[in-house]
Image (tube, rainbow, N blue to C red):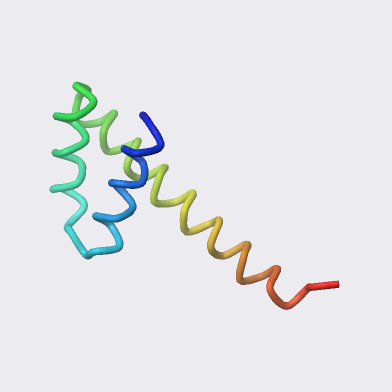
Length: 63
């Protein structure tokens, strides 16, 4: 999946679009089965949330 595709998924997630709709879009865009699309979307969202959590955690640890 391209960076543009990943950003599109994140934009949709942050806009409040339900996960099943995002998964359906990824299925069509990437031509993959539903399970693969669901795994992709979950991984993208999880990694984004983890990155944001790390950034917040590190904000208080500036040298």
